[in-house]
Length: 296
Figure 1 (cartoon, rainbow, N blue to C red):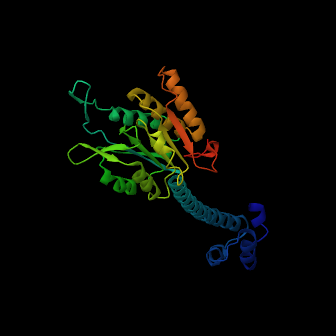
Figure 2 (figure 1 turned 60 degrees about the horizontal axis):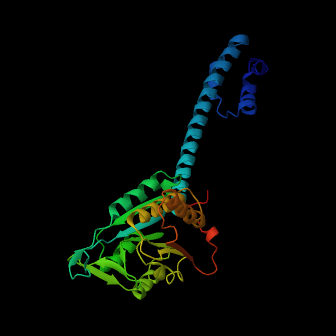
Figure 3 (figure 1 turned 45 degrees about the vertical axis):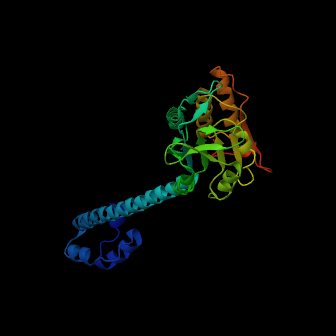
């Protein structure tokens, strides 16, 4: 800097030199300061002036850079929020476990044992939380569901996956409950209409109850896939199957692989019910191409 400035001792050359070398337009201050200065003294004044101006320019540049960086970071955060919102899926776990009585061969009234629905929901939630894509999955539960609650719950959650856990009948009806905790049957035709009237976000229906495959096969016209049971299924089998299914989905696997792993999980736990879960896919869709969360 000193060598450059030493060429411009004369006041009438200062303005031009500062503008050319450093882009400084206003030189009135430095002109007045060096007016009576000569030689090295003049160079010292000019150098000090420049050091100060360069520090000011540097501080302004740093400030602008910090502001730009902050704005950029805020923009990235907003983009990530939008991306997460787009990628996030909602699972709606609907449970109904009414008091069910039946008459045995001797004419005795028997109270059917309650299903372990709370354990099923807890295991599913735990498997999702341990998965790679856990932040992309929202798990919502609704308990003691009545038939008249269904549309309200679906509209509240806007599910990507609708999971029903409870009882089913051999002729394809789902067992919900009324205001007195007594069984209330939902017919297969009404369920199909319910699925058709659901929001466009719905992609998969899991009917984790006995004899539900007949329903699952009929509801895939307006969704990508459904899973049902072709026979009665025990509590432990239903829990192990569902928890592994959602764990695999949470690791970014395709529905095909997630279903396969859920079946293998039953074998690993030595639960001989691996033939009961059935997967149905809408016509024209390849199950290997169905990813409920971002492909891993």
